[in-house]
Image (tube, rainbow over all chains, first blue to last red; front, top):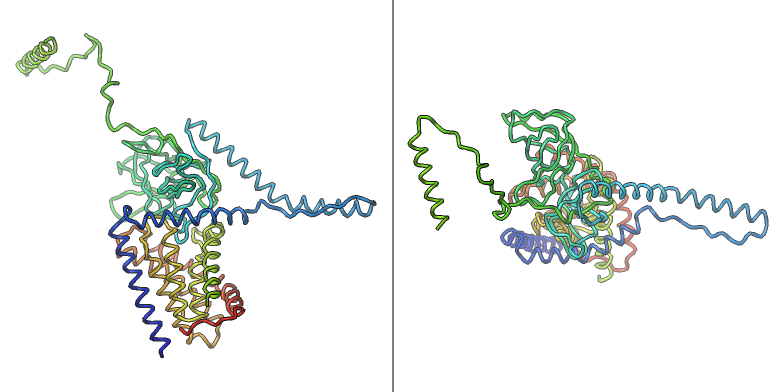
Amino acid sequence: MADRRRSRTLLAVFTLVALVLITIDYRLGDDGFTSAVRRGAVVVFSPVQEGFAAVVRPVGSFVAAIGELGSLREQNTALEAELNELTEQLPSVANLERENAELRELLEMRERLELTTSAARVIGQPPGEQGSTVLVDTGADQGVEVGMAVLSARGLVGKVTEATASHARVELLTSPSARYAVRVAENAETGLLRGQGADPFQLELLDPEADAEPGDEVVTRTFQASTIPDGLPIGEIIEEQSAGTSERFLLVRPYVDFRRLSFVQVVLDAPEAPADLDPDEVVEPEEGERPDPPSDPDDEDADDEDADDEDANGGAEDE
Amino acid sequence: MILRGAVLALVLVTALLVQTVVAPAAAVAGIVPDLVVLTVLALGLLEGPGTGLRYGFAAGLVVDLLASGETILGTSALVFLLVGYAAGAARPYLAANELLGQTLASAVGSAAVVLLSRLLEVVLGVDGPDLVSLLLEAVGAAAWAVLLAAPLLLLLRGVLTSLPDQPQAN
C-alpha cells in the first residue's frame, strides 16, 4: 500500500516537472536556454553516435592470420583461409564501391550546378523523429549555417535547421513541417511542396488550372532571400490527389531515397536572390532610345502636361 | 543501488545509439522501431511503476534534448513516464501468461505513445501527420513491439536478475 502511494507521489512529481518544462520551452521558443541545452546535448551525444556508427557500419572484415608456409598441406590450409578471408571481405568491397559511386555522383552534381559544398556523412537520425531529420558530421567549422540546402546525388535532401561546430541537423523534405517553393520543370508552373512523412510529397500549384501531368519533373524555385539554389531536382509527379474540395493537389515521388542516405553535400554558397534591384547596376537607356509612350488621341492635353513636367525635370537637373 | 542505476543508464544509452544509428535502416513503410519506448515499457513491466516512470522520465527527457528544436522539451518525458507507470501498474494483471501478456502490453504501450505524443502536439499547436498516417504509425509501432518486445524483455530480465542489489520497492 505504501509502495503504491509512493509511486503515485512520484508520478505526480515527475508529471509536474514535465509540465513545467513544457511550459517553459513553449513560452521561450527558440531563444530560450532550452535551445542552448539542446545544442549542448547534441555536442555531447554526436561523437558517441559517430563512434558507434563507425563500429557497426558494415565495412570491417575479420582477418585470419596466415602462417608461414612450410609444406604443401600448410600452404593449402593457408590458401583456404585466404579464400575465406576474401569471401568475407566481399560485402565490404561492395559497400566501398557503392560509397565510391555515390560520392562520384555527388561531385558530378556539384560541378554541374557550379556549387561550393561541404561533403558530409549521415551519422544518424534523432530519436522519435520518424524520418524527419538526420544528423550529419559537418558543422559551423566547415562553414555550415542554418538554412543551407543539403543535396544527395539524386537531388535536394532538405535544409540545415541547426548547426554545432562539428555537426548539423538537417530537416528532410519528408518532414511534415517542410515547405518548399518549387516549379514544374516542363512548363515553369509554380507551387508549394509539402512533406508527408513516408508518403509522396504533396504539391499545390499556385494556378489550380495549370497543366501538370504524371512524369513531369519538379525542381526548386528560388525567390526573394531564398537560400535554396534554383533548379535542384526534387522528384516527379505521379498522380493527382482528389481532396474532395476545389483545391487541387498533386503527388510527387522523390528522387532521393531518404531511407538510404549515407553521404550528402551541404551547399555553402547558395546565391541569394536580391531583395530589390541594385540602383548602381540599373542600366539607363541612352538618349533617343527611350520608346515613346503610347499616345491617346483623346488625351492630348494630358500629353502636353507630361511634356511640361519633363521640361521641368530637365531644368532641375541642369541646375 | 548505484550499480543498478548505472546499468539502467547504460541500457538507455545503448537503446538511444541503436535507435539513432541502426533502427532507421530497418524502417518499414517509413516506420522505425522505437527501442527507447520498448525499454521504458519493458522496465515498467519487469520492475514496477516506480522504475517505469523514473526511467521513462529520464529517457523521454534525453529524447527531447536530442530531438529537433520543433519538439517541445518535456513532451516525450511526460508521455514516456505515463506509459512507464501504466506498464508497471499493469504488471500484476499479466501474471497468467507472463511473456505473452508483457508482449501484448508492449504493443499497446507503443501504440499509446504514438497517439499520446500526437495528442500533446495537437494541444500545443504543432503540425503533424494526418489521422490515417497517425493510425498507421501507431499500428506499425505496435507491430514492431510484437516482434521485438519478447527478446528485449528476456535480455533485460537476464541483466537485471544478475545484479546483486534488488530494486527498491515500487
